[in-house]
Image (cartoon, rainbow, N blue to C red; front, side, top):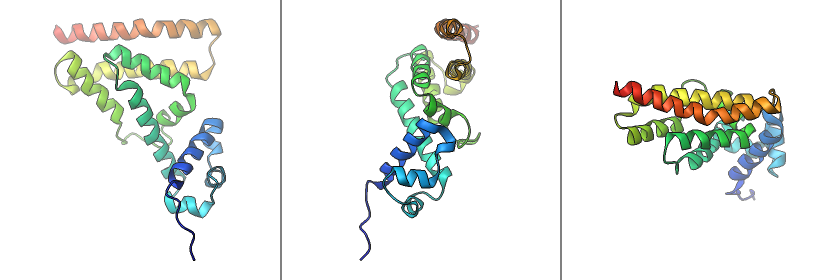
Length: 183
């Protein structure tokens, strides 16, 4: 008689993969390690995920959902930028997975980007496409700041100054782009 399927196994596999990634990054995430950490076996993992890349895609999707939960209640682009940076700094491994291109590639849909563009249009008027330059500039600033601070390559004083400069820089971008749009 075959063993009954565990309906929670997919979540257990993703939870295990998430924890392995968090602790050891890409090198720690093997299908055998995932199966062991999930309390299962490698064939059971393969029945749910074709390969390691599918597990990584599922993790990226999960992380995108976590980021969305953080930015969704925000009421301004400044708040979104701050929330995004705070997420990146408090979840460095997750941020790395979501942003490093191991899985996403350039053609992958970025639902949070679309969400922020839509919100920018709601808050600032116009169409989402009209705010791409601003949203991309804020995203680039947030990504650069997160990458530098997460790398731990700055002195403590420089890291504090970079973090402190982030908010005024985002505000300046927003003001500049609003001014350019109205001119």
